[in-house]
Amino acid sequence: MIGKKIRELRKNAGLSRRELAHLIESSETALVNVENGIENFGEECITKIAKVLNIDPMILFKIKKNHVKAKPENIQIGKNIKKLRKKWGMTQEDLAEKLGYKSSGAICTIEKGTRGISRTQLFKLCDIFKVDIMEITQPVIERDQLMDDFLFLYYTDRKSELFRIISNLIHIAAEKKRS
Image (spheres, rainbow, N blue to C red):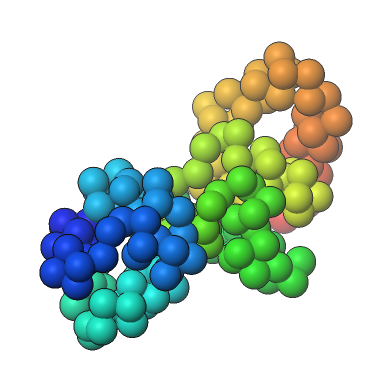
């Protein structure tokens, strides 16, 4: 596991978690979570770790590739998020900050599909990118999921988002009927 390898290499270099986190511009909590296998860093952070520890980054990338499997639905959602982020001229760091993540590693892993994203964060993305949830989740979203999202929006009093989804569904249905 990549976390165990990072911990081993960090200790061999004589660095505390706090010191390594500072050197790679991450939080100590994020590093603890990576070392314990709870989270994964993105390529950028892994590259920084390798540089600080004076090792070939491929050592860590090989470990990561063997242990983190991306789900197809996460890959598609990640691609959609990346496309919207670039359309808005945002960096991964910018988006991480807007979503309340401490580092861009979370955005990197979400965009690659190796990390899922919560429904709450999806709705934050809708607000950030000024789109409805269909634009982020299409073509992944299933009918049952759509109903869940509909009810979630209704009961959390997010009526404007709800009306945008209904409008979008009517538009999609009309397009399918025409073709």
